[in-house]
Amino acid sequence: MCDYQERRRQQAQKTEQAILEAAMELCRQESFDKVSVRDICKYAGITTGAFYHHFRSKDELLSRGFTSLDVYMEQVLRGHESEPPEQRLRLILFSYASFMEDLGWELVARYYQHRLGQPDFHSIDPRRFTLQALLKCLTDAQSQKLLLTVQTPEWIAQFLLTAAATLFWKN
Image (cartoon, rainbow, N blue to C red; front, side, top):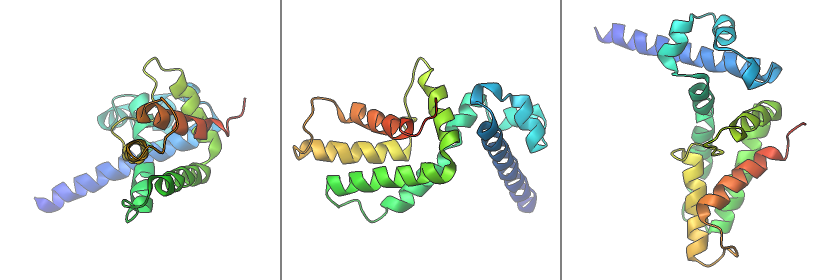
């Protein structure tokens, strides 16, 4: 019984990864809005039912597709928690830019272009590690009176993540 459940879990992970990879590849070729769920399923070799078993929508797929960013950022920041905020901020922003460059700026630009058009736009899900790490850094900087702005750490974090992504957009 355990073997069966483990095989099912591994198959589910494999299918979800295939969906994510197919979506990323197709979004490198076309804008996110032009790629359909059917296109993703065809490219991944799965049914639309399998897609909806793993993701409620294309938007959820898009949001969850950047989970690898959080894993990367957790690894980068491990052991740096007690460093001064300005050093952590530098590490966060350079690491974020490096990750995005490795992912491919065209795909990242398409992601942010799509997200900016949403009525409840946030550059990144507020529950995500990357945003939380940036917020912690900015909150620490604010409490140490290192921020020379009236903007909140939340506003600054959203601005920095959006600005970092938009620097590389093609119009």
